Amino acid sequence: MAAVLLAAGCASNKSNTGTHSPGSGLQSSAPGSTQTRAAVNKWGRAYEKDRKNRTAILGYASALSQNGQTEQAMAVLRAGVITYPRDREIASAYGKVLAMRGHFDEALNVLQRAQVPATPDWKLMSAQAAILDQLGKHQEARNLYQQALKIAPDDPSLLNNLGLSYLLSNELADAEYTLRRAATLPGADSRVRQNLALVLGVQGKYDEAIQVARAELDPQQAKANIQYLQAMMKQRQG
Picture 1 (tube, rainbow, N blue to C red):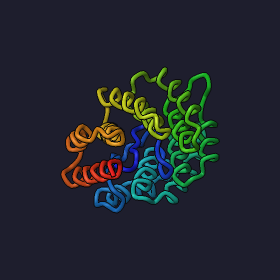
Picture 2 (picture 1 turned 90 degrees about the vertical axis):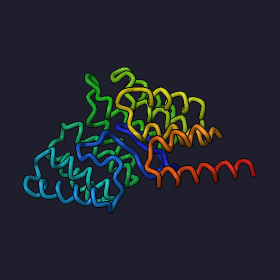
Picture 3 (picture 1 turned 180 degrees about the vertical axis):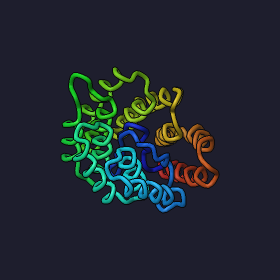
C-alpha cells in the first residue's frame, strides 16, 4: 500500500512508471513467481524463434519487466525500436522500461519521437505524463493527462494516473475525487481501487480504506495493508 500502483497508462512513484501493457497478462504477478517465470520462458521461446515478431517482442519485454529483468527488457525493446521505428506501442513500452531504469530524459525523447502531432496517441501522452510526474513537473503532467482524456474520455487508467499525480503533490481531495470516479468506470481494475484505498488511508479514512482493501486483495495482502494503515493511524495520532 505504501507504493502507488499503475494502471494501463500510467504515473507512479520514483522507482516505477508505466505505459499500457502488452499482452503478457502479468499485471499483478510478483517477480520470481511461478506465473511470471513461466511467462518469461514462454515469451522467450517465441522471441528466440523470431526476433522480429512484434507480438513476441512486446510479450517477452513485458514478462521480463514483470520479473524484474529490466536490463534484458530494455535490450529487447531497443532492438524492437530499431526494427519498428514507427511502432508506437513498442516505443511506449521502451519508454516505460527506460524510465524504470531512471533514464528519464531518454525515455521522454523516445516517446516524443514516436508521437504524431496530427494523430496523437493518448497512451504515449500518458506515458510522458508519468515521467513528468516523477520529475516533479506535475502541472505539465496534468496538462498531458487532460489532453489524453479528450481522446479517451473517462478512461479509468488515465483517471487513475491523474489521481496519482494529485497524490504525489499531496492534493489529496483531488486525488480522492479522481480515483473514486475512475473506480466506478467499466474496465477499472484492482490497482485503481487499491490506489483509492491508499488515498483514503492517507487522509485518515481508515474504515473505508480497509473495506476497499479487503474487497480487492487476498486475505494475506489485505492483512498487510490493514496493518500498514493501522500503523499510519497510530503514527498520526501519536
